[in-house]
Image (tube, rainbow, N blue to C red; front, side, top):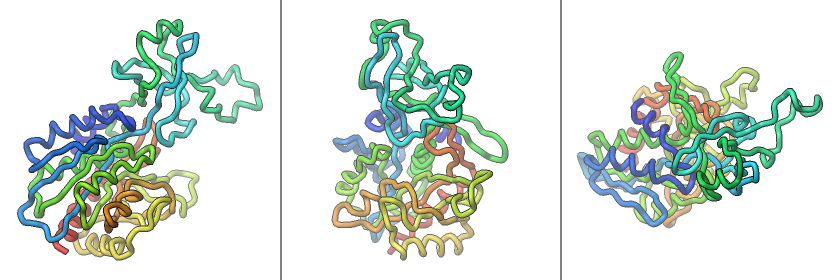
Length: 340
């Protein structure tokens, strides 16, 4: 599992540029999956035959894309203007290394040194539109030989295991979820299951909806990562969830009011099987459940997430034990829904 997560996070795949991630996943599952298709939007849809036929059709979804940047224009000095792809705080961009374009050109998101800032500006974050990516080019002409408008840029971040089973990397949202699904496909499943590795989640494009129309499931499980704010100085009711306490189930976010019966069912199954599970205690964010549960005539949907600190940054942090517990509850829910 750690190797899967590491390899997936090492790939670049902003929204609309998920091909490398999709190709890697296919390379991992091609000898295990019963059927693999790629729809016109780029969603990877997989069927894996289990030990017995399912009474109800269950779809598990994880998105392949990550937050990043798109180059919009090149300045006369060779620096690159950009827009964010997905929600990224300016605070995590400043001075960060990135790779740009298909050739993985190294760059840095430049920022004015603190020594040159007026006293009244030192505590303020700069306007994101004032930031540029520096790739070491001396002119627009030189930069244009390396990159062009429309190229994507991604954070460059080392995969690190530290402390008591903590994992730091970029793109853990949602490559950790993808890793869980890949591992399930490579295992012996108790029942038939469908999987979608979807595109465009970070820009709210709702592209997972087309996978739902293809599969037409009775139930869906959205496998995600979600914000953990278990940090010093954060009020207890705003911590959302905590690392080391297992997977996270939402009752509501900004796009979905989740089925109460499925919410209760998840905790009942977790208790019966000794699986660590916690509630997402803040109504915030959103994920593919927003489009999945309203597609194809309506789908009973639940979101199960891995808690993640510093989400949408180059240094996302999850805990290995939470990945294990999240996978346990997802497998248990999948079998329970399929046998309904």
